[in-house]
Image 1 (cartoon, each protein chain N blue to C red):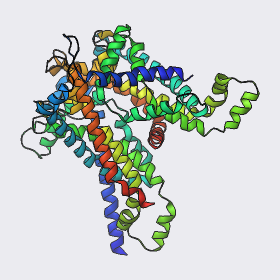
Image 2: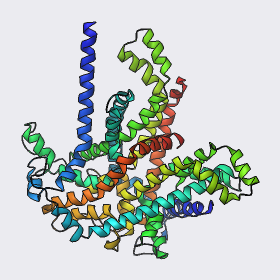
Image 3: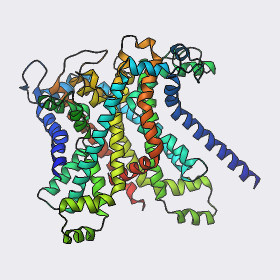
Image 4: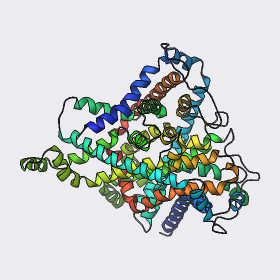
Length: 282
Length: 287
């Protein structure tokens, strides 16, 4: 009995140590950025202590005023809003159709969605899209960028379709008897019932748009004033006196991190359950 | 109502695939008109481009090491957190946190932390007297492994959540009846949990495999594939065929060759996935 207790204590200690190490590993870079953004460059480069000695809020003032970060933040917010709305509208309507209606080529479309979900050509696909959008005059344009980031939405459609399938068809039928058309059925019957999955689609669209880097960089290549935060922050690394301005890099990174952190604090349950839903259906 | 999606799907998903399938047979760069050259891109790729195969090797190293580190850690965390205790939900949220962070911005932060002279990591290690002299984490020898660690940082939370969902699906009665038989903790782990989880583990490994092959955003910011190609992965190499303007290297774009490369890469991933599925076929028979 005594030996049992000893192993139990040891196991608990090991567990705690393991979790503690993992939490430090996970949080350290984030805290480093947040703390670093409030330090003087001197303190940051000398690695002098974890907490700021003097609270240098002027790093942020500098980023916002001199480096145009107001503009980049606004760009990011606009981009995210368009992407979220687009993703929700497009994929919920398409998922609804795929779940409820038969139409010619439905099977073919289904196969195509599935097949291309698993083909990964990498960033190559950006180039032809870029050329096409360029011809259409949609590059250096936040709406065009939002369209590209939103893209085909195949996995979201499967998510929505699965959810619509769980709504009893009788509801549609009775709505039809009451004189609801396709569109009205969708708005008044389906949408209120599939709200949880719409929230997940929206949340992930928001995250993807906020965090996108490569696509945004390419599509704003000719126009710095349209860059979203991620692109602007990373480009600080290549600016002329990058070596000397770690505190500004940290401040820029924090400006990009904090909004999504705040969103995460309020929605982490949805994020986590949404990921599971996506994995099971996908 | 389906129309908006069909249009967007055709433009942003279908069209690029067709484009790639066409231009992989062309010599196509910024200056000249595209010329049809048949299979020459593939001949070049297989016979005259050792650098590409180096990036393929790097990719396999990256993917393999990342999976070997990430998945066991994620599994152990999931098992620990599966039993609710005070603070377990908070810990879960913290460990999931990197999943929602922008990998390029975080790569920039890692770039600062890993800096050999002013970076925090070397300073901490030196103060703890674990190392004598600063280590250059982004040197030729270390760069790729460092990229793996940054990749692991971003991936643990994701797979932890998958494993936790899987653990929920193991019926509780099995544990209860096993406990009546006086099972020990390690037996519980190896005789019940892992065998019951096999189908889930199999799927998670596949998702991790496909996902890790495509990682390039953080590597792009952290090392740009350097120094001297030490941490170059295949998708980053392809990326430079299309968008050659980077801070350190300048070359001309080669769209046709890039298209051929991307088809080969997609095939490599396809073959690996298929081989993996074949090799693990029997694992579904557990139930």
